[in-house]
Image (cartoon, rainbow, N blue to C red):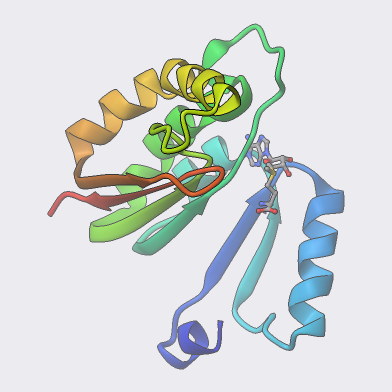
Length: 153
Ligand SMILES: C[S@@+](CC[C@H](N)C(=O)[O-])C[C@H]1O[C@@H](n2cnc3c(N)ncnc32)[C@H](O)[C@@H]1O
């Protein structure tokens, strides 16, 4: 955060849950890094589309309800509509980092096998969108997995 402020930038945190946002605000304030931070309680899809511009970096860890009539809003499949909404506001060459992108089983453990099959299903539409608009795409098989993507120039 100190580097962001020094560079004249700002950070926007978005969550639909006001308890989560209250905790985030308290943590940032206690750490003394709440300057230039916008704490927003809103749906990241509609908010990003309407309010954001000139983004250098996005960290994505939203999670919709496990049971939801709209498959695109279910669990981590929500990455797809959020990325669709935020991509026009991302600068060319900017970075999207996403949590829980585990697509490779380095342990051959049955739990991870099942988890990866589930991830491939829920990320199918998101991956299609990423391959159209992001020219660098990698996932790293940490315990829960991390994906890193670069917006095409
Ligand atoms: C895995 S938690 C991550 C919480 C926090 N960002 C963190 O990194 O510790 C997923 C969060 O996604 C939020 N969420 C679900 N749907 C959302 C949406 N449409 N827009 C913004 N946040 C959403 C939930 O309220 C929940 O707090």
